[in-house]
Length: 363
Image 1: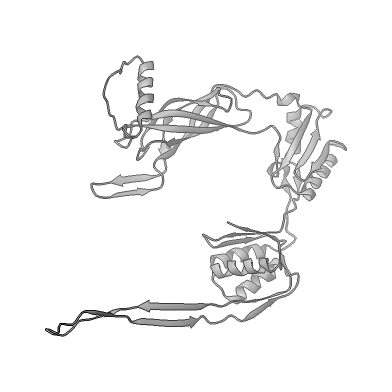
Image 2: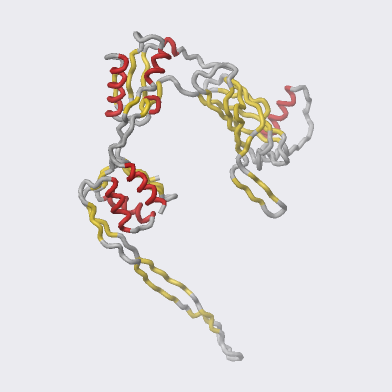
């Protein structure tokens, strides 16, 4: 029923209702991107749900180093706290982030800690791919899972061994990128398409003058900003221009959830579809026969098998005319009255027969 409603909603949208989209939502600007950061730190304040130090000796090492830096000598001491956990800290440094800006971080346990709920991340430097420290993270962890256990049972909901710290890291180093000195910028389409790239080129040249935009390929449009003024102001004008994108005919199927999403331009050639099924059931109910008393007989197991074949009421042979649009495809599939999994199988068979003129993606 969910699939029929989803397909019907797409169908009711009707053809010819494509709308214009801002260029900023269709492309990525070359050079304007984030940078991944990674750190290794320690979470404290856990309620007995931390690492078992015998199974995670690296937790003891980092804790010893931390205490040594704070002036606490623990050499030769035996301590087995259960309220600490070693974690990996990840974050993304956004483009044009300045020193002092705060960014979100994700904290994930790397040992055998059971939960990070209520823990506090101790000051952790975050390194970039070049090994330099770009931010420092610290704060209280917000975990999205729940864990509870007793002496003989344990229940876990979600993932309590991972959490986030909103604005938990402060930027300490900026990425050197002189955007104001750029003379040329490339626009990279999120979904490469020659028609869409051509429309972006035409729209920018109509707005800013001929020769500003040049389509290099299906996924790239180059901009010449040398004579238009400050690049940042020019890009502010360009990114809000609207273009009608061209989409590829595509059918996406998720077998796990039974979801089918079909694009507007999907077409099906003339094809006939019949759908039905057989249910074969074999049941074994062995019967034990005991000998009579004092007969010196043996216990015998007598097999009892029941076999049956049931055929589901057929839906007949449905014919889909040539060059059928999405609306007629939906009507034809619903007329068969099939279950979601059967509908997915029908689409696979139509695609295998060469009658489905669209990119077919199965997840």
